[in-house]
Image: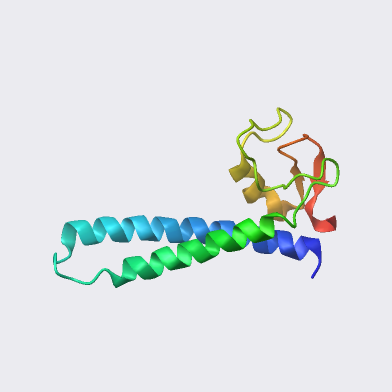
Length: 116
């Protein structure tokens, strides 16, 4: 499997992780407000498990997507602020991944995501 495909799978895992997290929180709020106190919370356990698996997939796939200039992971920012030449946040890198060209959040160099 080439790195471009791994990058797309990584970005999809980020989208899926956020979608599951939003579903988990909204389900938790719904059950807290409207559900019977004695009802089962199994759906929360399933959603949390799915969230954990999707986040684990992202954590594994992220290490395969490295900047060719600085060799750092493209979708993991860490605790340092992003490079001033980049878009400013990792969420914009994820959204722009499918456009074919992003700016590394670590070194500020342009990266062709189709040719990784």
